[in-house]
Length: 250
Image 1 (cartoon, rainbow, N blue to C red):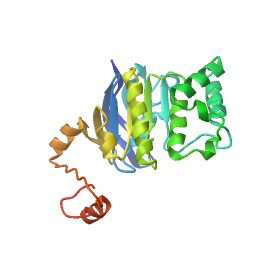
Image 2: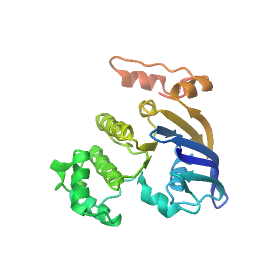
Image 3: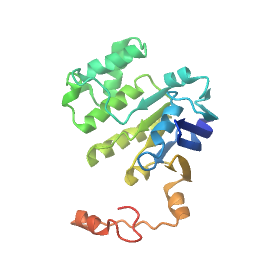
Image 4: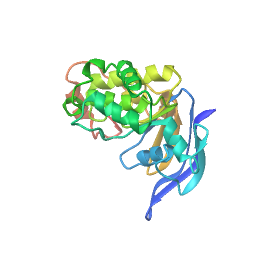
């Protein structure tokens, strides 16, 4: 069974169609990257899938639950990580997780919190204020809150935006570790190195799904050629290539 199986999703805000007949499937245990420019409809599509929005048109299931009629059940089984860090900065890591555990009515609270802290390597930072964390550790806290109720599906909306490369790699190592245990992941990203770590990718633009497949399949079907450069002063090389005819992305 597919963890996500949706067809013809449409979402309008006023006269603007933000999601335009999107069809997508994600198999259980799969990591799928969701790519597209800002304003392309990624966030709205993810919010439909986690039960926060109801589509104007289209049908589908998430974890076997109907996206129109079973939104409450979907929310219980899904971990959703937003673009913006949304935890209390004047509370410690442990206190934030205790709050989340009570929202989900998890009992015993301390057992869930302690297990999650250990699972994400946060035990030694339990008493650190969330507001003092670096970007990478904030994302780790957000991921901890997402998985504490043991969801079957993670929906991650640009989780590593603004995070340094080392923290991004460590975050993705965690994602693959979780997926190896059977968790399904749909993650939106702007980074091609992250897309390459996904089993498949789906590309959306102006609300329309344009391509789906492995990175190699999507690149081949698009008629694009990718070059990988190594060596010193790559920032200067990137600046020189940016905007040149025939160069789509650096």
